[in-house]
Amino acid sequence: MTPSHHRFAMTLAILFLAEAAALAIAPYDRHDWLLENVLTVVFAVVLVASYRHLPLSRISYTLIFLFLCLHEVGSHYTYAEVPYDAWAVALTGGSVNELLGWERNHFDRLTHFAYGLLLAYPLREVFLRVADVRGFWGYFLPLDFTMSTSMLYELVEWGAAEVFGGELGMAYLGTQGDVWDAHKDMALASLGAVLAMSLTVAVNVRLRRDFAREWAESLRVKHPLPRGEVSFARLWRMRKRD
Image (cartoon, rainbow, N blue to C red; front, top):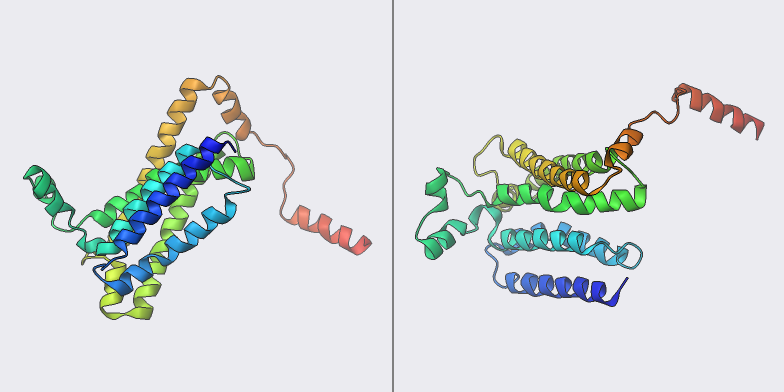
């Protein structure tokens, strides 16, 4: 990894730590702030631990940085209380909610959408470099991972709300009275990932001459014989011989 790449990654890390430290001061709800940042700490530890053996591209680190910064804003205010509408009124004199006809705080929706939009590309990079996927699978698996982890996060929110209960549980769950909140959150994360992968496909179609060949090769059947019980039987015979 070049020194300039290292400096770039360190600069983003320092900027994020500075923002996180500033937003850690007097959050709207200290208990909710702690709960919201559990996964952030885990994610940061994984990034640091993998930095030496799997340094990501500048694009991926930038996208991750933007998502984490957005999340820190939500954790400071609690997602249902981020005053983006007041900020819009102060800056432009107009209300975003009135303009779009919104009756709830939609900062949580924005962050779920950003989860797919900003993290699908870094996930694609990991799949390409670790799992060595190619063609169709290099675009589908980041989308699939985004959708599955969005579902898992909604289950985590539900579990936390059940365990902690009361105002803390409701603040973390953040449904704001919408019975379809979890479904909409998952749909927006999926939409963000679809857009990110669609843009990536468009760029690769434009710049890569072997795009169609690689895509077709990735969908070709590599092993014509069925697996399942055939593989189990072969493994059982091998074990008996041993």
